Length: 630
Image 1 (cartoon, helix red, strand yellow):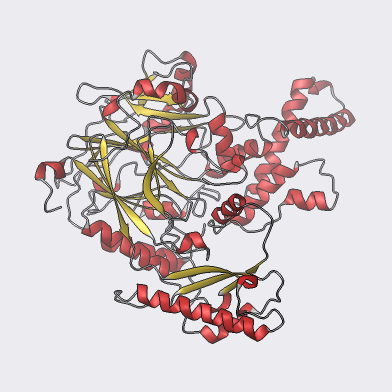
Image 2 (cartoon, one colour):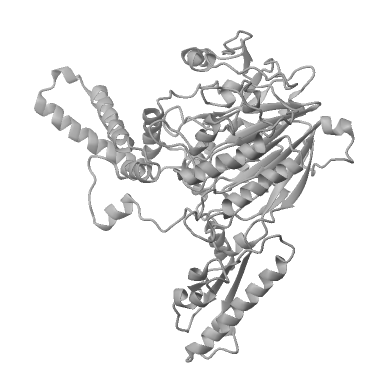
């Protein structure tokens, strides 16, 4: 920073990017309980040392959907130590903050006159800390209410069928640099996959061109938290689903550190995968060194700098095939034990050499994947007892496996999948029903499966109630549509309900065989569940007829939005019905320390995801496929 000209500093947006902190992971383990907090503390310290403008987190800040009191207290303590100070904030948020930050305050946290926020933190939610429960709240909402984190990218899945979402950017200005920050919190991968492939289901709002700032002048960043690598493409998000106008994508959820930005072929934007800051799965991908990314943006160019995390617990991983080792006798178990002991000692020694410069020497994590084909196994717990006090995970140093006939490519995909700590070998309701040859004739299996998942994993007490309500509404609709119920006798109505249920089950059976664009009953039920739990109406539905539909902000104190003359009639009607939801939110005043709020005079225009693949080049014509660097 000292060698950088003052003019460049005033026009350069500096962002520290990290994902998957998983605060609270292994909090009941005496050795590893502090690992996630120490890594997060180091991330915040790096942000202060590098004098970044803000920290950008890519989801899974917390490891559990309902973090413990101890985890919440420690997270708040770290954020207070590093984020609350008198350091001036050099950038302005010039978009409609009531739309960007969906809380009761409706403004970025450093503009609150009651808090001295010197290091703003922006975060989306992941699949571990996603919104749930009666009020549809996330653990990140707690930090937002404490004014420590700017929580964005929280979507209300409106519309019918697969649902509709509209992604608004946070528009940031610093000198001559303009950054449009898009956030998309975790949505169930299968559903988001269908949304991206359904016309008009995902719409992207873009800044409107002005004399001093054209559309192409904005540097567009997207941060999301989804599966990226999956054997089943329907349960992952392909990079090519994203709009071409983006310049940079931060991908959360995947734990392997692939932090060097790579250009996505044919898309024109670069992608970084920072990975997790704490090892949650003892596999090869997690043993790679952990990093965070310093992203410096000046106008339409960026410069990435990867910064290693030194507080992360050392992790050594290796794989051995017993039949390939010359010093092992298949009939002598002692020779197997001696060889494995030798491997463990070598890994511990290798770890100590790597950490010789660290201020605090931590017990390393050690994992050996043993292919025991043709050999007998040994007890991993008994084997690890001799390494208590020498390694951090004595109980699971060894993991045994047998060689399979699948190709190396398939094996590599399996390793990627295991990077996700939440993916366990679970059995759902549908599998149980099929195994016991049961017949579900009233509530469809998929609906019950989703309800049980939300009830158990997300503490959604209204999950089963919403499931029943949705099926009742669907049945009433079919009865009212088919006949005049006023002429029915009681017995006729009961018979008609039975016929309607059978008809609906047949329809859903047919839908399940259709293409991804077809409407899923589970997706429709999730719409009912989210409306019931959150008490929030559907999102505003924007016109899909034209890609250049414009929205202008009113200059009144209510900061409401209305359609310009280019909007369609149907979209104007939808907006008027929802106007009261967006226009009543105010924004706090500045603190008088030279951080004044930007005037809300930037208009925005919609860009439908399904149209963006074809038309975005004309919108962002200055973007090239060549690597961008300062």
